[in-house]
Length: 177
Image 1: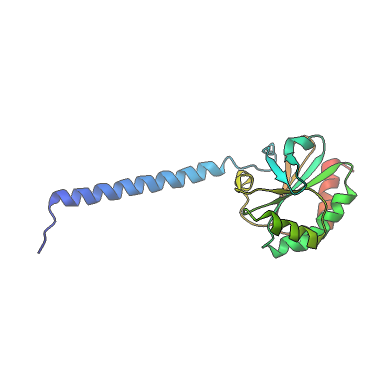
Image 2: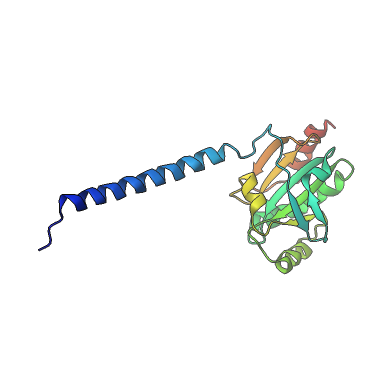
């Protein structure tokens, strides 16, 4: 029979305390990190992403226009369903607004291009290969869309699919038209 001495008991208690402290710090870090996520009224974080068009796009390139930043994936059926409505509004508001579709989860360029060809959209499709932009915006559900005013502030965040009328109403309010 092996008896644990008092020393072994203190080692076990010390290990438990260290694990609890590390776990607590990790949870606290997550809570405070969420405070940095963009919210309505905040300046939208700038990003720099390559597009399917071969160009590099920065959010700051579109200052002075309303911007719709739509985070989506080819695996997302609601994303597929909202694309025609977003495309239509992209054309309707081309003079004063731009849509940027941000593909997430590191999907291959071939997969994304095939999807875009199927849903027939022509607004810029940007690739977020390491999900850095998705994480910077705190996006966990798809689709998620950020409406940004011409001054670069987030006006509305929508989780879930958009319909044409909702896009039109939001852009009308942002641009006061």
